[in-house]
Length: 260
Image (cartoon, rainbow, N blue to C red):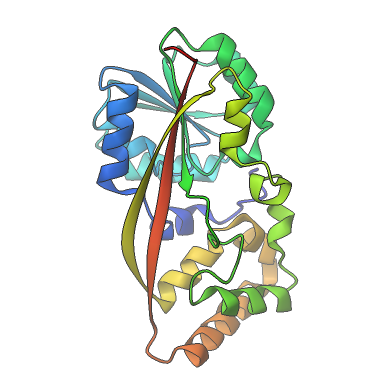
């Protein structure tokens, strides 16, 4: 995972959109303000930092040290986050937690095994919350949803970058998170969808592209400058105004043991 996102952490922290106050508020209500929450695959703290301001404590775990360093930098004024290097294979040796949240990290894991292990570890009333793009075209797995994505896809193909190299995900397997939850110990699932309007400029779209594992600076290597220049020219040729609008649709799944 460290290599997959090599060099991407600053771009991830700056250009990946957060989930917004409404989604974080929903998480707090579902997990409980008095809870100790594990953010598994926390990245630079996209969920962990705003969540920590509203719950008792957050345990932020990620396999990429660069992501953890960005998170610590961004959360200098947040005292109740513990940042730990690790992944889904160390659940049993982590400090105690009562609830779990995962953003765009869950699809990198052995999802069935993680859910089964959490079924053994979480206390009565513990929930697993998954936060990410709603089930729809785009984002960027179906790369025609947003107006700039066909351009980015062409440039990525020109440089031999393939989204399918990041494809241990439900987008590749066809198994959506909701389907796996239904067959897990946490089959009682509630869902809430949140919509926001975002505006992008060309620098923002380039930064967003560099935050993805399949087009990270580490993967591009010595071609990074050429890739950035090519993508910039292609985006502005397609849209000389240099502004793009997006409706960002996120979904929060909160899964509990049946009857809890």
